[in-house]
Length: 145
Image (cartoon, rainbow, N blue to C red; front, side):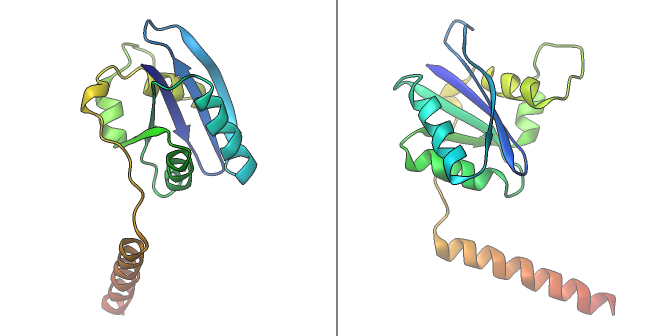
């Protein structure tokens, strides 16, 4: 199974891919979070073949449009907690913190069997989460007065 790791940031994503024996299938590339950029990312991932799994960190709300777009193209996407990725380790004693290194670390995770597929939230749930956030912010403001 091909492993694709995506390091998502605010306006761009770094994508890298490995084949089963550790061979680099896709050198780290940067894609913008625009319609064209997400389409290019999806086609680059689809070009790797049918048996491909995409893994990305849950980064606030930045990962949601990327995960939803790839899911629409029929790509298997898994969104992981950043703590899980950090605890999985990379075997390196250096603390390299670059987008390229993060993308390679994410696609190096080797227990694909346990990964759950991403499913986009329905609009009702999104609205409820938004209302809950707004309510909590309002109550925090009222209490501080």
